[in-house]
Image 1 (tube, rainbow, N blue to C red):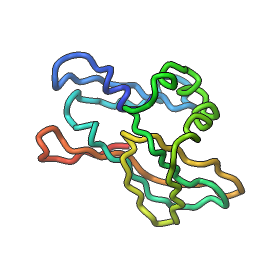
Image 2: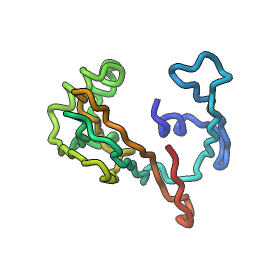
Image 3: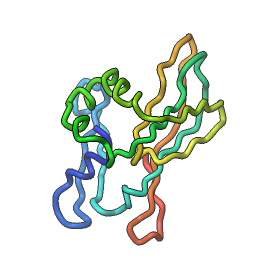
Image 4: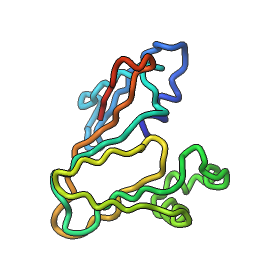
Length: 151
């Protein structure tokens, strides 16, 4: 589940704190969990940016594909189709109907995009070399006096 989807489910007034226990896929139990505290209405998620830096390029693939479709403009028939959200191949087929921009970043490139608003994906990686990146998200605080970043 995306972090902004989790934040949207936080109930309560501004300032409500929720603690998420994030258990890694290979985590044996809750002892391997990392606790992430999220405060409702600390940042402007609608203005959130995604960023990543490429540390190693794959042999082939690994391009960032940005679709000309905002999350908020996703057609109802796609939103109502659970396969669209749960089966990547189904989502890819549906998104093929939209124009897209393909970005092939090189090692050392930093890419910043509106990942909290637009549909995007990383194309399939082929070959012996993995695509290695480091990245996260950033957003202004509600009072515009601070920038928060997380990954």
